[in-house]
Image (cartoon, rainbow, N blue to C red; front, top):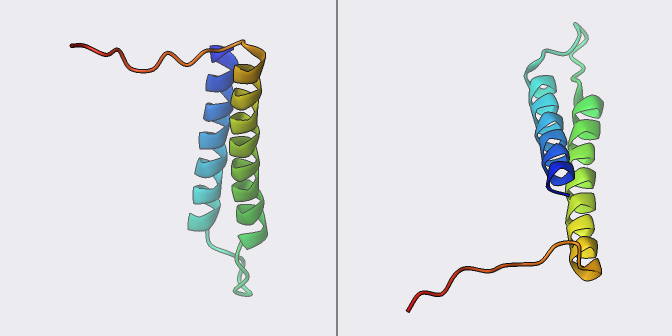
Length: 74
């Protein structure tokens, strides 16, 4: 369970890094930028983040994971 969450978080970071690299690259000689590819990478990042959030909620509902909270010390 934890490994799946870590893998998805790494995929989110990879999509963000890919969008950043596309933003830094120059467009072609006609002045066109690479905005469609960058927008696609950012949309992938948002989609993965939402899917991960929904999966964590579903896993909590099914009892696969439990919130432990912070230890209360008196």
